[in-house]
Length: 449
Image 1 (tube, one colour):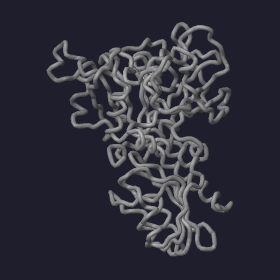
Image 2 (cartoon, rainbow, N blue to C red):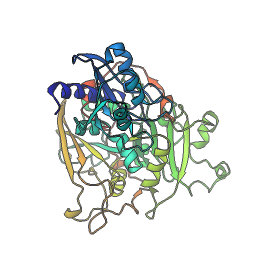
Image 3 (cartoon, rainbow, N blue to C red):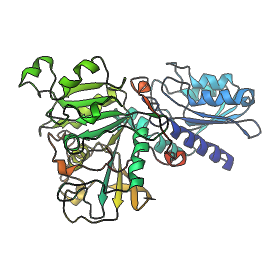
Image 4 (tube, rainbow, N blue to C red):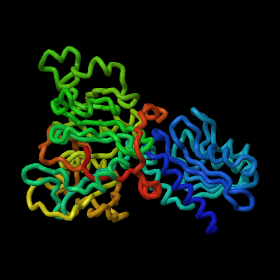
């Protein structure tokens, strides 16, 4: 039976793990607290970046010889394999730890098995303490292991009548300054920020993180199916963060640029981005993906391409059309709505066609949190059904769900080993609240450019 002291130590470990959000992919976020034999904390740490020491190692280094005979509290089962770092299970054994309490079992068949190794060494092992909290904090990585795709959070900002823009298309700013500032913390916690062609045309968004000290820039992704939305001079081409532009594989072969396989703004960035990867620096990469039946890009193909690039968490900042395509594909895991105290009466609604035709087919959500940000209300909800919806009347068919070929600008919403360890850090004053970061994993915010 866990004691109050055990629970306090694990809760601290969960909060520590959250400090790694946005910097550890494709690895998990992990926190560890070490207490000596008398129950006093002597070391604590978290996994700070992919390729760097794991949480257990950081905590043990701070504890030193005081770890011997003590207890280690870890949010994820200690790993049992050697990659760019050694196995954490062995580090705990060598440090003389007598008891290990971990929250969530490691589902990765390559790294799992640490608990068995610890028990074989005579260490007392317990698991399941604060498992729900630890799972929520590590949702992105756990989703990637279990489903083979990134964890997707869709955010939007709207008035109380559910409109994301006025009838004339204006949307800046529906949300408050406090809400808009929050988006940068959320971007800093994500591996990739995704928008569609409508947002690219209407807003020319920048999509980089600003004002978060030490933030790792996410991969900026533009779903530009026809290859016409990202124009020369677009802000996503400025080199402030890595950029990936996804176009249809049959697009751009109707003019002289077809010989190089580049379209639209590709010609502008050819010289300065040759050899640049999607997230390996601050260059621009173009990728061609298959269309689905409806003509837009296949959502599963897009997510698979991002997953291959080490992306484990996606912040979906596109408008109602792109959001509808993701919902129809069963590819939304979390929804964040920023509700502003205003009414528009007309204009685009928050969500376009998502393949849902009846109330029985509605995407059910569990509300997890409601928080005031200035005058706005931020509501966080998670999807209350399997990520891939079941087929049936009124339910969307994930095999035919697509990213729309084009979007009406008026429908724009508000706003690793692997490549990610090389994403540039963004200097600037810290605006993130570590305590708030510990409450959520990849939450979202209002539209921000």
